[in-house]
Image 1 (cartoon, rainbow, N blue to C red):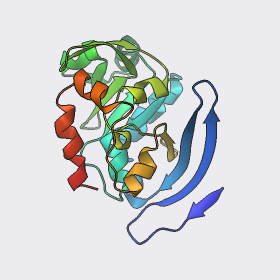
Image 2 (image 1 turned 180 degrees about the vertical axis):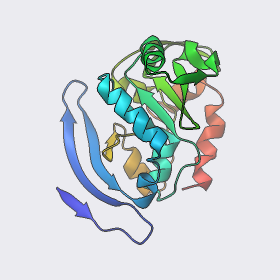
Image 3 (image 1 turned 30 degrees about the vertical axis):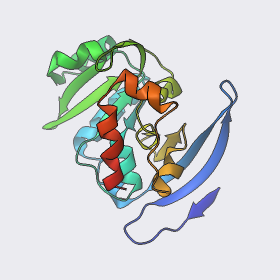
Length: 208
C-alpha cells in the first residue's frame, strides 16, 4: 500500500486498486487522513455512526462533502448515504428515541435525524426509474455503484467511509486532482434527466 505525503493543509492519502468484475469497472479506493476529516466527528456523528453499525446498515459521506475533504477543505454541509431504507431508518431512530424533522424528503429516500443539537440528512441509495428533466421517480437499492451512476459529475459521485476509505467508481479523484469536470456517463443523458445539471457543471469548476 502506497502512502503519499502531501503539502501542508492537504490530506495524507494511501491508495490501492481493486476490480469490480461484475461491470468490469475499476473501483479506486484510498485512505483519507486529514484534520478536516477528523473535525467532522462530533458527538452527534459518533452516535449516528454507532447506531448504523449496531443495526448492520452501511453509512457513508456522499457527494460534494467528499470532494471538499479531498481538496483539504472542511465542508459546510455534509450529506450521508445509506443502504437502509427510509422505513428502516425511521424504525431505528424511533427505537433509539432520536427525533426526526422535515419529513418532506422521505418519498425521495431522505430522512433527517437530530442528534446532539445537530441535523443529519441521510438518503437511501437510489436508482432513477423515470425522469422528466427536473424530477425523478426512484427505487431504492443497496448497490453503491448504482447510486453513483445516477449522480451528475464524477467529482460528486464518490463516497467516504468513516474509517477514511474513499470509494470512487468513476475516476472522480483523478478528475479532481487534474481539475477536470466531467459528467458520469453520457453528458446528454445526464442533462436530459435534470436540466439543472448544466448549472452544476459550471459551479464546481470555480472551486477546483
